Image 1: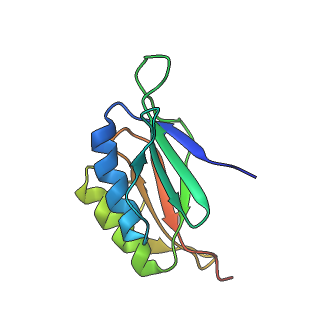
Image 2: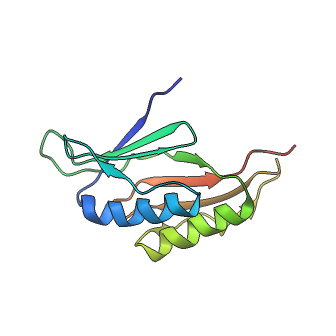
Amino acid sequence: MFTHVMIGSNDLERARGFYDATFAALGGEPGAMDARGRLIYVHEGGRLMITTPIDGKPATAANGGTIGIMAASPDQVRAWHAAGTAQGGTAIESPPTERPNGSFVAYLRDPDGNKLTARTAPTR
């Protein structure tokens, strides 16, 4: 259904450090800057883009929004969480944990305040 997810950042180099580390923890490649100055991450058929707002106003995080990223294993979720907190992300909600449906999840806010989750597929 979706072609990509685009989020804003007020500091693309800080965002690059965070997202390069978290995508590496999931087996992904570092982001690439396109000709328009946007960071682009492509992994497992998904595309995440990070940009400074084109209207020149500060980027703000969505209130109530969460971006979910698929992980292959609980170990990848833990590595994603550790990499994100080491790169200026903030751990939120609960520590990495298994949910009643069998998925293993972790939540972070990136350095710009965007809410993210890495999770495995449900097993029940």
